[in-house]
Length: 276
Image (cartoon, rainbow, N blue to C red):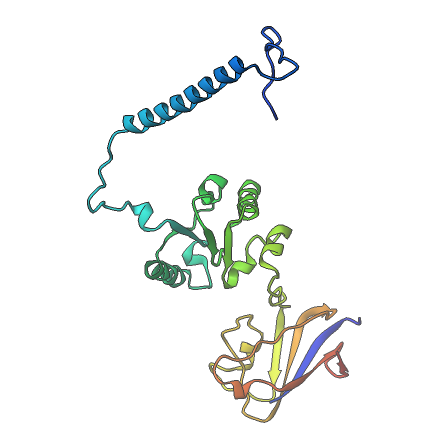
């Protein structure tokens, strides 16, 4: 693509084994004798009686157990289901992880499960994760699990552990194909790195808070506004670039002010323009 320095944007609102050392006596061809049959019945009866006596003795030998009166349940029995809520350092997150964790704890109190909250990736060991029915991951900006920690997490999931990822959790472990498969998809790559702008002109603006410079300051919380139905803005870059992509973000106050359609043009000299 041609190098362009100027850009213009217009928008419209089995059996047992035998003992070889002591083999059993051979059975006569006609089967057991009367004496052998009587002896067998005696031994069978003795075995049954002995077994019964052993059972009776065994039962009688057990101490009597009194049922406890109003036992006090332990903390673990009160909440046998535990959930781990993990997020990065709260001050570094764009998502409100504090209120989110509090909301999950409130759900636990109402529905009988216990919630542990942590921002320490050291909790990702198989022995520790095995204590939890599920892991809820919130935004984890600034935290990356080590190879061993992710391996423990993967083993936990493969053994039936539960997982819920909330909002910016989809940005965690950005280089991990396994984690991408776990959450199913990734958000967009975000805004491209802006080029350095040295000059801005516009058909109109609303200074001081909605001026033309706000359009190119890289801050999605600021905005440019022109009150006319059709407007244009021209930016001059520090050096010529080949435009491969661009991004626009809408303003944050009133949907009716969002551009309905627009045209992006490029120019090598600021005079002759080509639609991009």
